[in-house]
Amino acid sequence: GKNMQNFIKGRTSLVVAASSSELRARNLARTAQVDIVKYVYLFQCESAGRMLPLQPRHLLATSPETAERFSHAFDRFGDAFYEDVTIASLKETLESVPEAEVAKVPAELLSALVSRSRFRPPLCVTKLREQHAEPGVV
Image (cartoon, rainbow, N blue to C red; front, side, top):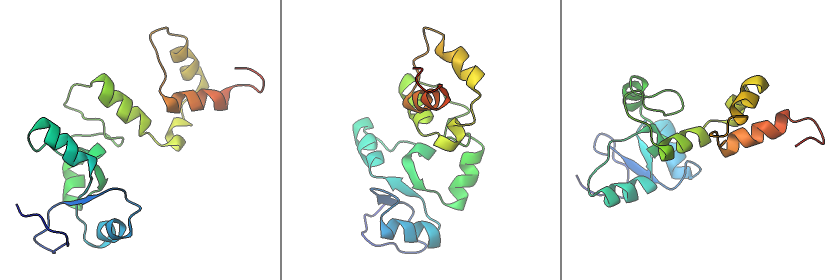
């Protein structure tokens, strides 16, 4: 591979960006239909000493080809169907669940989970718990 600063149609296979709010990254995601990875992915590859397989959590934008490939291996929140979960990967997956999805969790289920001493709710569940709490009750 070759490192380039500019996108070249038909030759650029991967774009690195800090966030999807960057104008250039947004434009490439919309028009070029190319995979755009978070720059943190490069640091993870460096630490591992090899190119790591791309996963939804590494991407800011996904090409149609990659989205199709991911649809067979990951759920809509980026959790892998065929890989063992670690505490770190589970935490990352749970924290990436949008607030709107978290709000759909029934209060009864949340109460049952929170009552278990082994359950340490991630931030999104803590927020949901606060939303379902009666005023003045913590």
